Length: 129
Image: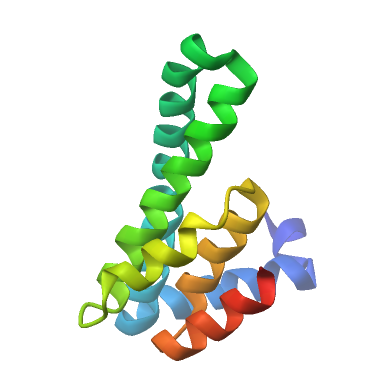
């Protein structure tokens, strides 16, 4: 154990972890981030399941891609309405209608998580389109 603690990088990680555990604000932020990551994975899993269900009718690969895209659009719309509750939901729906590329949808999901204002969100989304 002493050999492990003598490693400077590991010792720094342990100090930061202890500081995180002692600060209620940092602990709460870390828990929120972990929850957001679990939620995102669950949403992606749901999108994959939806794609598999559609796969029988349209061909497995096409159905998976379409299902993932629709799941991502649904996730983005839900996050948008939670993050900007006073906004017009039709604005995000119109924006998402023109996007079917899974990579761009994932980029939009990342943008919404990082955006502080609705204006910032749409400005950054326009750059990805």
